[in-house]
Image 1 (tube, rainbow, N blue to C red):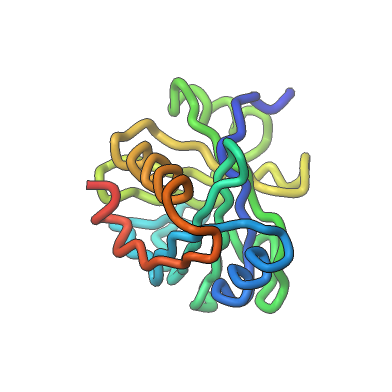
Image 2: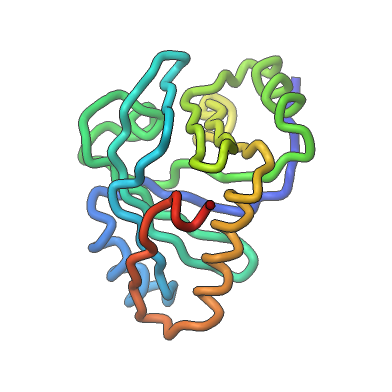
Length: 180
């Protein structure tokens, strides 16, 4: 069964040091400005169906119409990030997609043999699910249950990127402050 197809809106990378990765990608690839969220707090996290804790920081910018996210996992707990890269390794981790019907998309990925590796409940009640498509395409696919908060995050990053110098790195506060 083929994987469901939706427009890619984000490319995300797991990095060992988010600050170093921001400096390198700004200097060498010309990306930026960056909006930084440190030690992201989420109401609930599940890893492979079990409650989990993921201590992570994320930096966001735009590359044309596609958002770029850099993720650093600070703790050593199991996660969808460590499923792809063990501690000390880094690289491309996932694409993200808005889906018109979250439940339908979730079920379609599962039917295609790509189960949910990790699920994040967002501060506004939205949901982000990492579907494990790594056996098919070498990375995961993140799908969102529609919410005003997740749209606000994408709008904030887009507006920030359009109004700040490329070498700007700004603390974005908390996920909750952006999403609610």
